[in-house]
Image: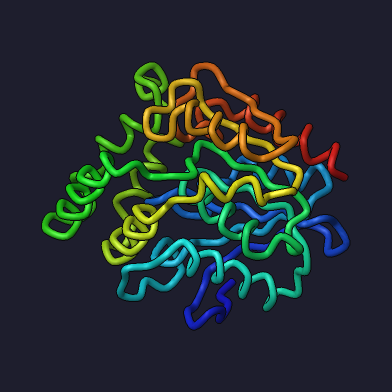
Length: 264
């Protein structure tokens, strides 16, 4: 469905019993809400109401001129929840979605029941900024096509990419279909990430999940988050890179469901 929230038109899907606890899923850069298809099904059948949404500049959500900020992307979520009448939610975010989740937890802790941060980071180091500038320049001058295969190489291990799996082509199509304005705007938002010193303010039940072979947001980044959020739990998934929810779907789902059921 389409919702007017925080000055833009947002695309979202809300499924499950109205009385069930809500889990909000926030996707990575250059994907869309359908990257969560497998998790949405498992969560629904496990007694949760599932909200998936396309981030500003992605999928069916409006792509205004950027740059965007993580604070703005978090306010988009707040506005969406308010329009839908959702007062509290479990918040699961992967990569960029995990960055948005951290900002949301810091700014609106009363709206979150628990936090699940997956394959994400709390800070973009200065030495990584030129890499992001190069990616932005490529998208500006050549569109998203040159980003498809390099992104797939970062997101999945070589052995997984060799498998003839429909989900791999699905992710390729998502990257290619990402509006350039949305990619640029959200890339600028990610480049401003610098939350590590504030993480001690988060007092929510928190699960951190990371693929053992994630090159972009490595295990060390998840450990840094884990060390600063008191009482947080850390799960490292073997044989997974960045999109661990897809590469190790069953192990990912088991970790998330175990955590959520204990919160219920």
